[in-house]
Length: 200
Image (cartoon, rainbow, N blue to C red; front, side, top):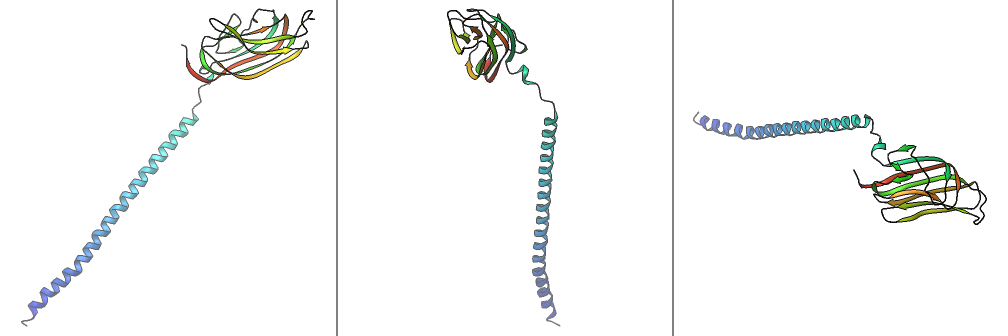
């Protein structure tokens, strides 16, 4: 009977030793549950953010795009008429935002321009010359120089130009012929490809 008190403390110690691993295991399980919950909340937040971004991009792509005709300088000219030797053709814009003044295309922005020109040239029998030249000329404040020219050997011959030119603000582009001629079905387009800061 005297040995029983010694058994109880030993049993108590044994139970304490068994309880400590169980408590550690329980605490570890609870920490794991908290971590799992945080991972789930984080993943849900990321998916919600991704869904919100996709909805925003979808709505933005469904909105009608603004027309670029007001942003990009361009012009398109159709012309049928007479050309007088030494005088620029009296061109007028059919559509576009680049102004034409006194037959000259007024460039208001530095940059690369796509130039396209097609048409037919008819001329009377030339007495002194057996050919005629159609010239695209650039005129600035001080000088005038040819950007392109094509020699027409036969009346009714077609002219054709597609090129890229670097033009500057304040340049004026004109068309000339080296002799009197009739221009038919001329289609002439100028479009800015790579803009630099433009004049207001």
